[in-house]
Image (cartoon, rainbow, N blue to C red):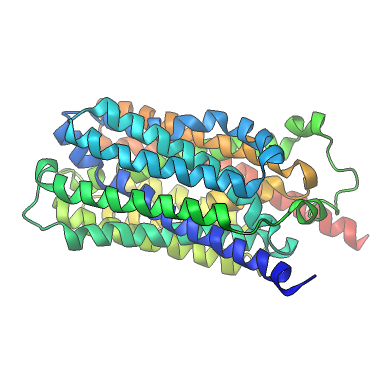
Length: 412
């Protein structure tokens, strides 16, 4: 193998990490401006959540993208992802200019399709561009970079948008310029993925399944319990996470909860993503030393307690509860994904499509929470997160049991 061939996996891995970072920043602006959208378009909480619905609805096609990957390759899927990301982001500008909420939702739908391609292709690349032992750690690191970018995005907004700009109308010039810059950079990243040297990771993904005595054939993949249960768990916890993300500022600005100003809630949004990124980085470090299922179980128990506290707390205690929750929920998706694809070998791409389709939870559950918030109040609506987290605890404990069984079998 020549020096260029040896360097290619590192270059492609670095490119994937950069994509996760920048796309995390681009995706953040939806949640950052949700309260302004609600006021400007005169929306209910449920209607506000339609942006989250539109962005995540394309994940219904994730399984088909997983089937497409063997034909066009992981790297080409990333190129398609960046092109769609760029087109959707730029479409937000005429949507805002025309004051057309339908066009805004269409833009988010295109962005969601790009996000769909990114995850279906990017997660297996993170898993396959290195040794099997570091798969979960690389997945957590890649997703942590997206969370770090989400720290920068709201912080950047607090710096470029003056405190005196309190309505969406007064923020429009800043938003249009921001979306234009992001769209251009996303198109540049698309060009970068087109010219990047391809790396075949199929052998690495197959070797990750070598510990399985009888790797699952294609026809039986969809009845694998850990894959199907992994899909259901990801569907539920990501839906709960999307509701938390999209209603974060509404929660803090609610006079019956914390009653902070819009500028303060924007700054606290940065703090939230700081704790979220810290959780991802901590997860990447801890899971090199502790089994992923155990760290997941511990985090889920902490999340259950914090959600209960959020539903009753007021003032500073409510702020602390929602900020800490970001730390513990941060590892849910990458850890669940890693547990679900472990040992699947050549079927990893297809399983990735099914698991990534779990992002449909982000389309449906936040809308249900929005309806619940309109009915029983925003603060109490977060109690619906308890059910997804209980299911995640079941999956984590099941994973701990399987890990213990494998150790006993090895010892025997």
